[in-house]
Image (cartoon, rainbow, N blue to C red; front, side, top):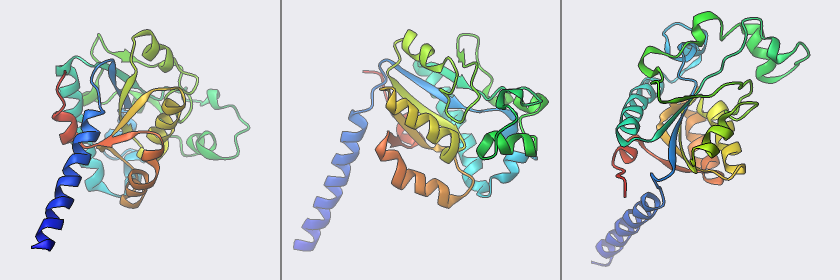
Length: 223
């Protein structure tokens, strides 16, 4: 009897924690920020799509992202698309980079031509925002993202995109430091491997943001 009672207490506690988490997430003054829903990631056979080792995780993230975007539009949330738009000769990166993305992107020659175009399933609508000027890992890096958010009274960010442990992570951290309340929709993002995704969700997110699933996002209702 005691064992059954303890199990019931654990279940009730877990349910209460979930309710508390969901109650803290607001749709007021909120926006959905999409990181790099471009052909370079989402077209089959591109260099970046081939780097996604966990194909099931990646495929599921794309399908979940479609659901999230559709529901966000239905709710009337502000939609902010954050692409990476750099010149085919990568002149924005300069010629002195020795490490990191500034060095590796020109070397492997990603983000060329129409691979920079928005994927057909995630093309922005006319009323939606497209961030410009970004050349770094964070969506805020040298871009007008912060101005778009502040000028439109957006305080709460739902964040999805690619890759979880690189540009989504960088954007989340900077959003936190700029004072935004950020929620990662965990299964509408994808890292290159299962281990990278799990590490991010288990050990990184709670320092800077909340996390929910696509299903939890779809259950949110305006107050």
